[in-house]
Length: 74
Image (tube, rainbow, N blue to C red; front, side, top):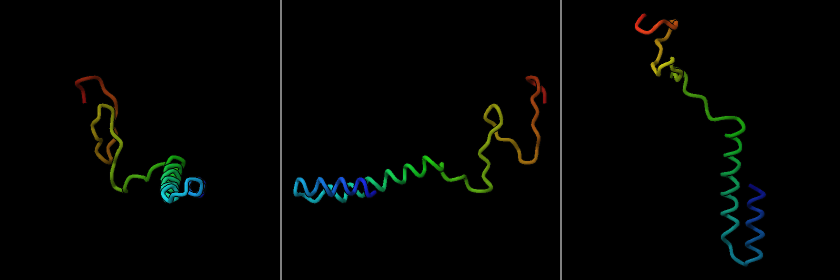
C-alpha cells in the first residue's frame, strides 16, 4: 500500500494532478489482499458442509465406508 501510494504521490507531484495517489492506495490495498490470500489460502468451508466426493462424482453418506467393487456389484 505504501509503495503504490508513494508511487502515485510522486506521479501527482511530477504531473501536478491529484488522481494517482488515491488510485495507488486502492491498488496497493488490492495487491496486499491478493498476496495474503495467495500465501495463506482461501477461507475454509463452513463446518458441517462436506465438499469431498467419492470416485464418480457421487457424494458418500456420512459414517459409511465405501469399497471398490467390480462393475454392477454392490
